[in-house]
Length: 162
Length: 289
Image (cartoon, each protein chain N blue to C red):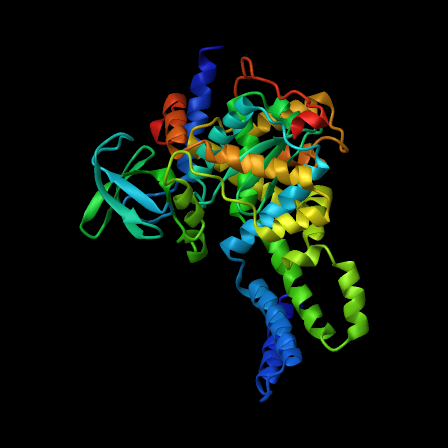
């Protein structure tokens, strides 16, 4: 009973994944990260063969499990399906990354201060403690880097490291 | 009928702006009036065409301050913060808005609930954190909240409210009496250009409507699966709560009944329970700051 449970879970997971990421060879997808790396092989640590900017349309050439071989003009390579989307991201989402890029310039980047109007609002509402908590939350957040998340995914065998 | 309101409001705003453009002279009073009108028109345009990332962040932060204040502050435990942020950001990385500045935290409350505010701020209560236990279950709960942000559910409420507020502001331009009444009513919330307390009431008190919640369940489940977590994570959390006996006052009070949510989720096998998970201990108010 115990040995069959992981198999059942794995099967259910695989079925669900294929239902969620419905990319097929010959279809098109869009990049959604500020920069999407295309890899020489369908492995997370493979050599980078090219990069594609935000919201670019790519053609799906081949599907291998959760990995897709895609091309955009002369550039082609493998990418984990979770890094693509079937709907073109709206342009507003591109601006999502402005603060993120700034905070990733150094591993210990300072937390972005709260908006001045939010600070005034907290004062008017006598929510000074809550404001301090939010500032602590954001400061603590900046101490966890993109590299930490990469390492977490690798250790837990999640995302492209599955 | 409702769909016409933004267009009518926009037309009114543009007409008002055009009327001011006809003034030849320039004095401070007229300039102030024109600026006020432009602000009101801006609200209408924002309502009609969308909210930018800076405004979204501001809305999210103001709403977050209210939520933190109402739920006993945050649990200031480095290990727990690290766990929820690593897991949450792993999920967010594969969401439709991976570039947002995502931050996750645990509220110091033993009720069972979770909230998210625009701009990427996600909160779960200490009660839900304890109930979730395993990474699979926690991923299910966080995935649901991430979906609310990527689906812009709260922003849609602001957009609808903002459009109405903008139209109201324009109508009040020439009524000093009405303006005085209005400023008393919205004196605090209007500082930020939107009704903060109204949004908080929606998120914290009444909750999103049931279809919005079911969509977030579905999308959150998909995100958890995409990231590699068990499909039954959210189901495990809801089933566990149901087995304990649902108390509508303390368990997901702002969400549809557990049975309704479970009925709409696929009948995935439940993932194994967590071996041992560090529990978020209740902190005296003084220690949470």
